[in-house]
Image (cartoon, rainbow, N blue to C red; front, top):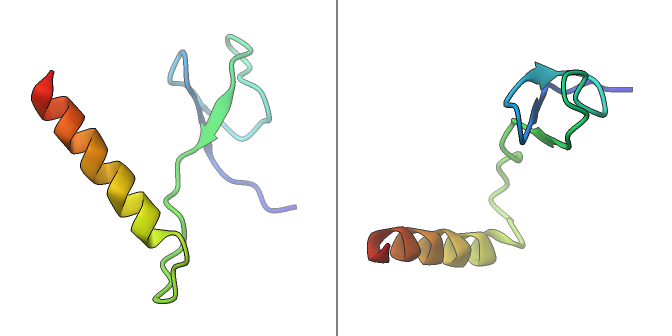
Length: 59
């Protein structure tokens, strides 16, 4: 089993466990996905990133 560092979404603590040991919250993987020149979903990620930037500029 390959362990990856994770961060709690609510309390921002880092751990290797499946649940946050401090608050029991959900965790997210902190590493970016591997780069691939044949990225099937890159187009959609760029669209979402552009929408997020535009939304932050409006508010």
